[in-house]
Length: 185
Image (cartoon, rainbow, N blue to C red):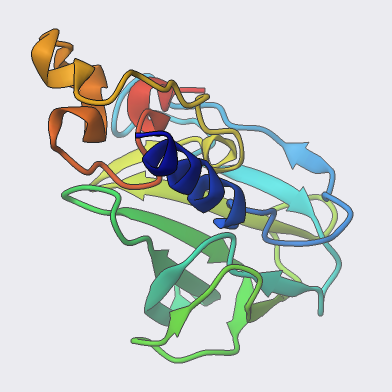
């Protein structure tokens, strides 16, 4: 049992976590997340990061490019994240010039696009969005996942821990376990 716990701790330590899509250093957030009160109401469905044209956009985590091209006259790139449930999480970037093609699998830190000038911000920025299905979420939650909780081996199933039991109850929930608890940010 101590070996299993040490192996789990080593795996968690060596697994790279999500990172900012521009930088280092972390960019300024020039416009924050303001979820709309309803699906068609006004709001800001992502965050805007200060970034001049030509700034490399990096994959914030492992993913597959599922769209790279123009939408409404602006370049957009969508990265679908594995092991994030059904439907999977998708993170979007605009205005950009994609550097990779649809279908490309990328590890964290891979240059996937460059920032283009655009009318979205008073000054140049990168709009970073996050979706689960059709629901927009706060992309900053990717950088600040909820803290992990360790339970005794097998205690989740025996104690009837339910939703929080994760892999302790025999269910592997992936590296995003608990992140979806408070997407509204």
